[in-house]
Length: 250
Length: 223
Image 1: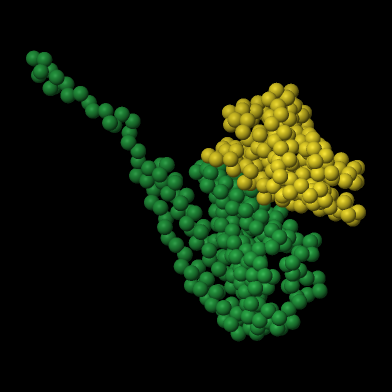
Image 2: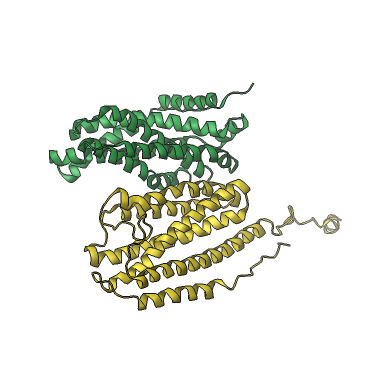
């Protein structure tokens, strides 16, 4: 008999994520419009947290990958994979929101700015990570291989982050994490941004937690299938009816 | 008798280079292919001599990156799982295998860079400035791409997609190297200091060397 699959799920992630999204949304509504950009500035409260969360997700992927390589615990592999998946989602969101913001501000959906281009490349690095995970069904082998890429991919983060300093192109330089302190004057705008980051972090944790649950169930199904009751060798062979054979010959 | 790691790495690199001498895949197929690509760019974008001189170095580096991936994945396509298993059973240190494969790939990439660079110099009339720096930049890029290709080849060795996935993995990861190389060339052209870009390349190569060495054994065990 195949072992039972534990499908018990955590209940906290969805309510927590809903609350975590509602609070920043309220700040987005009450925060003032920008003197130059007007209401367009409100995109920033989602665009910037999404970009930060993408960094966090890929750093967690790196940490999970290193921990897997050291300990061989499958839980670490699941953390790394779940975080990479959510990170790809946040990177995609960052790119799309950046384009929506860029069209009215710069006049184009896309420009060959260093930050934009490198963010797109980071997106493809982690799409490659996810593609690699689909090439193998053997859990251990998959974990081992993707862990190497999970460590390697993190080199993109400093490159993306410092690109606005190294190449002074169209994208604005860092506004919050600067040696001379944040450059946003309005405290409500700064609060909206920081609350957005906190809220998105909770959403990230909820998504990773749910994705890890799913991965655990997927692994259990693969394990159950490999150890399921299979037909015994020779079961299909029918024993000859010797008594009938004797009768016929007689 | 124990064989030192460097001796093992040398043996692996020599084996790869002997195989290349016999087959000539890089020298007789990839290098001419790169030269053809250099010829095709002016046909697509126009033959304005000033424009070609300006974009020549960038075109050269893009071709080095794209065709360098072909050279890097060569080993993934030619070395079978059985061959890798046999080397493991013979006691080959995985880190030595990584070093050997990277060195041979880097040597072939360097040859590719020199030959295609000479063709680009002639076709695009690229001004030769800061020649001593080329002896630093070209080997660093070759080594970086070689190591990246070796890691990616090891990563996909047992996957169902095999070598087909390597370009997808290597292309975006080689962008930091490409950026540093193009910026260093641009710096030379404009008379700006390029030490920071060379240092970035050195750091990338060192990071790849550390990651490749440390992950060689887990990758071998995963087969």
